[in-house]
Image (cartoon, rainbow, N blue to C red; front, side, top):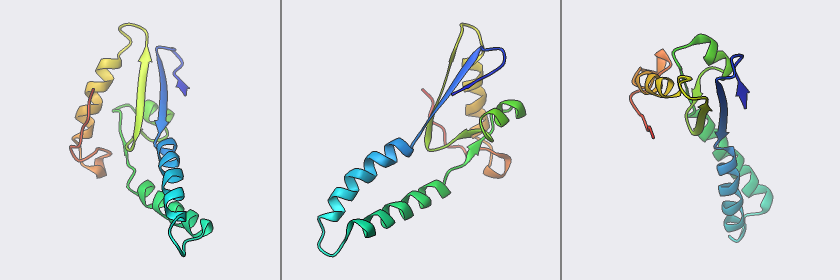
Length: 118
């Protein structure tokens, strides 16, 4: 959780590692039931799959270098990022800016037009 100096925003980033771990546990129990696959082999398979998924992660710019630095390079894909704070602190403006930034190409720190906004 990050807090800006003005305390108008509180950022939390719920990474997919929690979801991945839950899926990994379920997958591990299923795969260990297959004859010939030991728990060690299944763990190696799950680690390799997680590395492949993490390679597809990109960081999308917020439009502010300072905020990007606070977030470790921008807002991560494959994660849920939540902004909450006081009334009129700019949360909606940030969300709209992020939707526009996501339209940028990846070499411009965008998401190639893939947006989900709620």
